[in-house]
Length: 198
Ligand code: SF4
Ligand code: SF4
Image 1: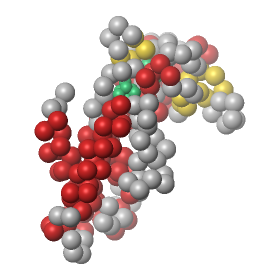
Image 2 (image 1 turned 30 degrees about the vertical axis):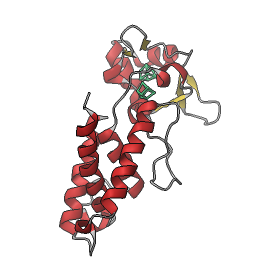
Image 3 (image 1 turned 45 degrees about the vertical axis):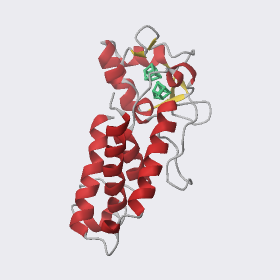
Image 4 (image 1 turned 135 degrees about the vertical axis):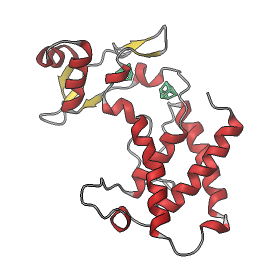
């Protein structure tokens, strides 16, 4: 685990990149139509993921329910477990009670894929998308764009560190003035690194 001094140094770097990345929308700096477009909120989430350190407390896997599945999540789990897709769907999923046609992960808490001995996920490489993006989920509306998940100590710590770093970065004279599209693009690409690790 990264020590606190190193994490704060990294947070300052991420905060500066975040302020730069959100100075212009993707549409102004990514001109190719095939480049994925993200919102300001998405970049805040990426920044959080770059700084996040899991405490391995297990709260998410022992209390989180329901967990929605994308079709490709079920496919990935079936492939990982080397079983047919229909068997994986039958064994591990239930229809979402509120969203017709959508599947939820069948949970009997704690999650049956949680290994309490190693405090980790038995299907880590094939865990559903909602597990991958945890704890920075539904985040619209808060001042810094990401809502803290109080049950996740890693999330609380990340937000505290990022918020402090943003406050410092906002007062940094280097980030004032008109946004340079090339610089904004570089900052966006820096934050997009987070997507490779989730
Ligand atoms: S699938 Fe893995 S990561 Fe997701 S809740 Fe279950 S144990 Fe946790
Ligand atoms: S609740 Fe947060 S800190 Fe705890 S295991 Fe889950 S992701 Fe890690």
